[in-house]
Length: 225
Image 1 (cartoon, rainbow, N blue to C red):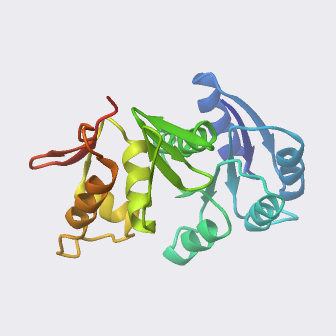
Image 2: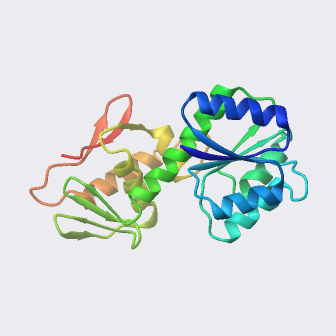
Image 3: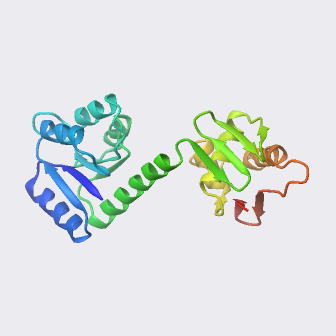
């Protein structure tokens, strides 16, 4: 990957750059907010590692400026400001993830990999996603199977989009509750089962093999065949 590190602490910057170089990644470094913003605008990067406490222009201002210009490069905010309110501020400013200092390089790299994969998935599947006989138009938010239009409610579409994104994989009820209903806990209802049942009835037409399989004791799997 080609990365941009915006960090004013020389020791931290050297540590991160050496670790990235050992893994084969190319890294540009900026030590001020202004220089970092300029580099981010001019260059093309797979991800940005951004400190908050920067001279001249603070990290959140850099981040807000990038997002205001439509720049969608994944950004990992790296900061000694690690309280809950600090992390919330970083994410709301447009950060894709937030890692408090002190940190382990292994976790830093894992988080960079994760936000880069998410960006890659978005780029690849931005227009149309084909899963077997099922087609999702991600821009129009419509679904068809074998050319047959499937009328979906909002939550049904979100559920189907999530299942197609993880086609062939088992997704648990907890994963679906967190992704679709934004709950960080099990609300103690059968909301997932009800919506899956409704979705099945809509996507499986006469003579068409069922696509959503129930994996007993685990969750559901969307078959791509």
